Length: 562
View (cartoon, one colour):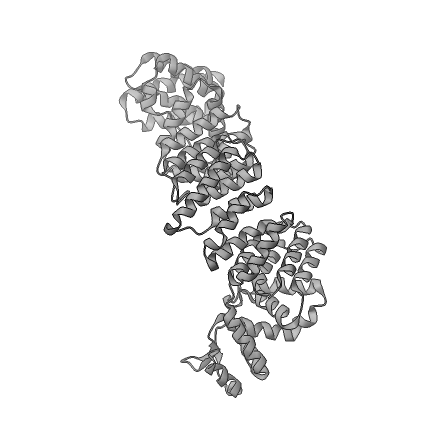
């Protein structure tokens, strides 16, 4: 986000007021730089004037080694180019509101071809308000109310950049913010950064805004008191707002309690603020125990999340909050984990909290997307935790429909496991095949269906199948025949039973029967393909022999079918 140097801006304004002719000349230089798409232009004879020499002396322009001139600061270039644009066309266009904001929209995109133009629209709006008396905020609200096709996010981002520099009274700012809320446009939270910078640069205005919102908590814009507090803490220190924030938390107004909790989480604590951190956590712990309001509990989760790097108590509190079934709190906890997935991924509190989120409903797509991303990262360092979470997920939910299967919900994780940890994944599937709970088999069915599209072929794990009894093996073979629809994986999974050690003739007979009575009969082409490959490329003598026996039976069955 752009932060204008107010001192430089005031210097330029004084220069313009004292040197109107110089302003015109520097506007011409800015124009030439714009058309050249270069940070400097040749210092030709026609530009060698007293105004330019004076601007060089004032540190606005600089002469380069190749006899060119450029502005010493990008803000100086923006200032004089904005002045030039206002005089040439924008002051006239101002009365045509839609056309004016079309111009602003197009200017926002021009920096793509010339980086120095970034934020030219911000400088334009500042100067129109401060030098030409145009009410930028009134015009903005009007266009938002009447033109629903515009990019609201882009407009609000612009006004957030502009707001700290318009030299407005607090009453006007609050009236604008209330009008803006009445338009019911999305993305309004973009304004928070602008209000924060305003309070940082102008603490007196920040204190007046605080006083108004804390006195009249029914204002729709009261949530921005949080941004004011952060700005005041930046400019005057934590102590300037800490006691007042504790009072907000003790208020009986939900909006003020919510704001107070969030502020306490956002304050820039350091090692010298141990007392404040402890007082904050005491206040939070009481709310955690006693406060039933959903909005406040969501704010509490957010604030605890901000304190994770500073306090183990905050980490424990997030674990406690993760056990709650409130979707708003679950979403906030998931976002906290997403934000700390690099620094805290291997910590116990992180993984225990992650495990609790297996209880979220399958409809909560945003939470699940965060979990998918986190689990994919976690798989590189802790596969045991990934296994535990996936199995918990299965046990916490009803038998899945296709759109609710692990394959659909955790697509990123699934493909990553197959690519980076295929032997481990095959071990996982093998352990699920032997499970008594049908939900495991249904998830296997959907995962294999999903992976088939990506050309993935899987096998049972030799170590696990070697531990199975005859009864276990028969059970798994029945599950393979019943739940695996892809003929290639059906063949490979069935054949992989032959990898068990020591060899068991009764189990070999099961495999032969599976091919003879079902697989070869229903899928003769796939059967012929896999058996040909196995008998030609097998390396283990015993398995090779068994494969030949199965091959002959399967081939005979296929011939009989034909």
